[in-house]
Length: 299
Length: 234
Image (cartoon, rainbow over all chains, first blue to last red; front, side):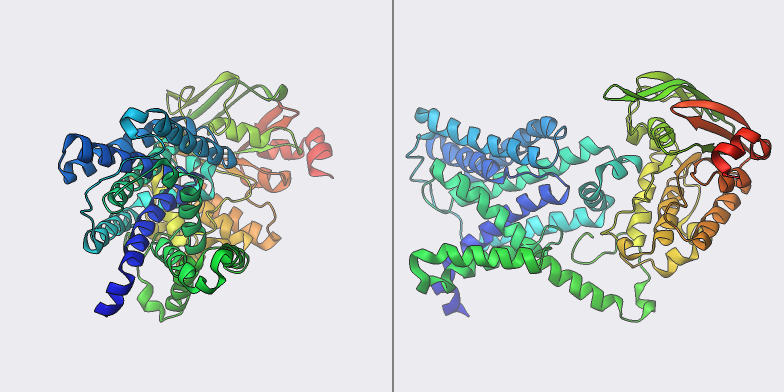
């Protein structure tokens, strides 16, 4: 077990970061906000922490806290125009947001280091801290799922006009989902910067955007297992594809197409749904449910 | 008077769907809105629940002007709309759909408990754990009505509750509605099947090309020559 851990430690750490960013991406999608802003939030979080720690000697916990606040503030501001858009237009708007963030990082060279980025960030993160962060995130989302907020997010995704006719203040809940997404994205961006020594704008570009989206598409958009399953596939796949060398991308694409075609809810979600169907067939006396006594995830 | 509508006008991109519609519903009444396809019946309900914003006119509900409210605020006042095509949240269980209905309560006390809703529609209790999208059309309609009941409606707006249902299912849904009304629930009902609508309501309005062309007691309208020719197809 320990030798497994030591030989794969970097893989495990990046897997945990990918899970965290996956939850940021998932929260927005689950509430029906077609956002791909997670890369932008993680860039803001990473740079806020890196600048505060390396330039101003701010203690690490305080820097992460500032990153979290920045992520929430920016996502809240962004949620206002976003609530007026739907579907693909939200995707385009959030794509533009990510591009703007990267352009600003390149432009304010004296502050952000421009294209070279920031180096010499103390590496204070390790597997334990990252695991703790993921567990806290899971706990927070699990708690949300136990309240009516989780159900409202699911209702919004399925049909926002029905949600409104049921008495859901749509814009507030869109904003809430998006702020949570921004918070988680920024925090995991900050944690990432405290792990990799140096960050540069290109780390948060198109590739990062697609990566966190892929985690959710592969894993699933509704259950807590989704991002874990998706990130696991994304972590293991490159290892399995090693013999393919520079053609690795092909396997990525093939897996994505297979999952979308045959498991459109994502591997993690399908697994949870399948388990639930099996449990439902269990004796009927078991199904006496109390308010919010839902397992694993929301819907 | 529980609901009063004065000179309501709605247009979509320049096409006028409702012109100067005025009507009222008294507390405890069951009122029908009949008319042919495209007469503006659904538009009227949408304008009342503010899922569509009217150009002109006033809607007063329980003494409050709904003019500046958003859709979610209107439903929290107790004006609950069961839209056409049932609109259950297909990925969620029956139980979860019913729980969501309680959001419309806002600060108001519940009027129907979960047990009472199960009492009205026993199939919902049987299917509590089933995913709503897998219910039959009639069961989904019952779920949509049951979900609205969870939100303590002062008035229930129903859009074509029998649409696409077998005659037997349609009868069951209408029986339940009649019972709810007898127990004191105010209902405004849109229905294509004019005969069925007139049969179970006390008063009715006839809508034609966005205007109210007739109104009166349902049993009188049912014998009216013009209504028979245009809507009852006899």
